[in-house]
Length: 381
Image (cartoon, rainbow, N blue to C red):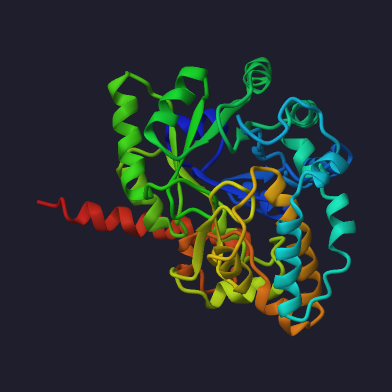
């Protein structure tokens, strides 16, 4: 067990945090000595309870956490809009453009509107009301960490964290955001560089981690930092800890494991991809996020593409189409196979072998130790 304040606080052996939408990954990583953190934003309250019941029963008493997305700004915030109202707010131009992309690849888009009408759960979960329901469920379990993936955690999350003795973590992509999170009361900062899969900022991990570490030292804060963005090896984790991080927060590296939720077609694409085969774009959620490049992402970067809509409307354009594409790709549809994509960071270029989640943790530990030994050897007298 690593003897660090963060490991001691959370009861973990190795400060490797696995953000995943797969309950199997969460359980496997926690059992291997890291900490699995379940991405819960897409689930209805009923489904969320089912997933957390399963994790609690399969994690072997090891520490684990939950991640939500409660952005400070999104379309319709505070208005209590229904799925139908959200869907009605999508311009026809965006619907037509998405349908045209599918049609060019031989995918029948006639079902898209029906699929879109049922896609409002994500939008509702972003609201404070939706988040409150998810938080109420999450805190019924013995979680050790709760994370907010966009913006300052809502007051309710901070209050419940204190009440239950659960660490509240927040993702940041800039130094000023980090200082704001500390001022708000976040217990852990997840400092995510632009290499990261999913939502990410503009500054690289190599620059952002020490920049935030210095800023926190300047105000006398000991808030621990987890480095995120492009980290898929133990050596990278060791480097980030040398720069001031207390551990690593990883999402992409789990996507090629057998336990992950990734479409098998996309999983094979990731295993073959280079670090240049991703794109940072607003076209999927309305906020900048990094994903595997495909003809779908290329089409939205075209000059003819309509401007991305605010969150969550852009998600309601893209997600129903991409889930439909995933389904067809797995049945062997050639056009859908070309279009299929998923969030992943630039570290995908180092993800060339389909290891199990537990084996990934072990590989991190071994690579971390080798990196530490190499560095120590340079200091020998």
